[in-house]
Amino acid sequence: MNWQPVSHDTYELGESPFWHPQEQQLYWVDIPGKALLRANVYMGTVQRWDMPSEPGCIAPAASGGWVIALRHGVFRAREWGGALEPITTLPYDTAVVRANDGKCDALGRFWVGTIDEPKAGRVAALFSIDCRRGLPEVVQHAGGALTGNGLAWSPDNQTIYWSDTPNHVVYAWDYDLETNTLDEQRNFRQCAPKPAGWTFETTAYAGRPDGAAVDVEGNYYAAMFEGRRICKFAPDGTLLAEIPVPAQCPTMPCFGGEDLKTLYVTTARHGRSAAELAQLPLSGAVFSMRVDVPGLPVNFFVD
Image (tube, rainbow, N blue to C red; front, side, top):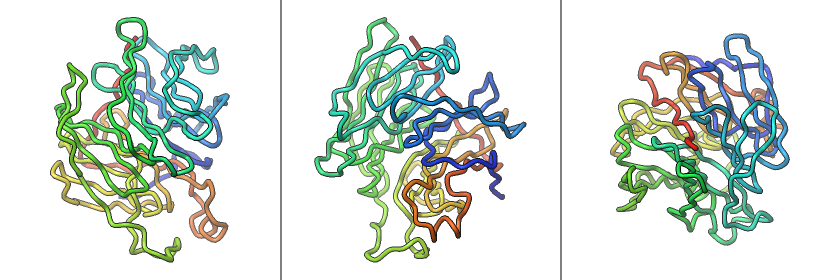
């Protein structure tokens, strides 16, 4: 199994990839680049749409278009490059907090995790936004984190996952899809901390859990930031495999292709050293690899 770049382009910090099954295109965001991207992976072409502030995550909408979480609010877009229609704002200080990792649940609610940029107050949280009955209903489900990441659900929607990247932990809860409630928080996986004196040449460090995806067997794939790998965990948290990535900082995987057997991963180059980028020049690219087990399809936003 070998990774191939989706295009020859690199981005500052790719995140939130998803495969659009109707369009057969791959979407993702570049957070510091303040842009949405979409690729025709068969042609190797990429379209860019600049945003007014940092996009944390994006999801497709069932009635067409997308829902987008920017630093300063959550928006609806109905055509590429078109108007951004405000949906809601989330209860945080945009001077020090922004939207980060997110996606939709199986009933079409849009979930957004946030990041505490100064890493000082543990104010990162996890929200859901339900627009199925008209006015948005915003619920906070978790908090007390530094960087919310790794949002995913088990195939039966009875378990929800969320990670706090700087603390090297992935949490799990029992989840009730109909009532939208979480219960029985537990550590799904506590990863080893970053060693003192670490450099990018220190291969012993496995990294810290960033964005994630789940396959049809319920295995959880975590991009390990600074670990140069994706870790595949069984539903009980057992490490099943480590998949090397040709970038120090993978950020989030997703499954795509017509059979959902192509694993995609976004990566980062923002803030990385010149020496690291010289050794790993495709840092910031989006990569793809064929796998044996298909992943879960993207969930659509419902409004």
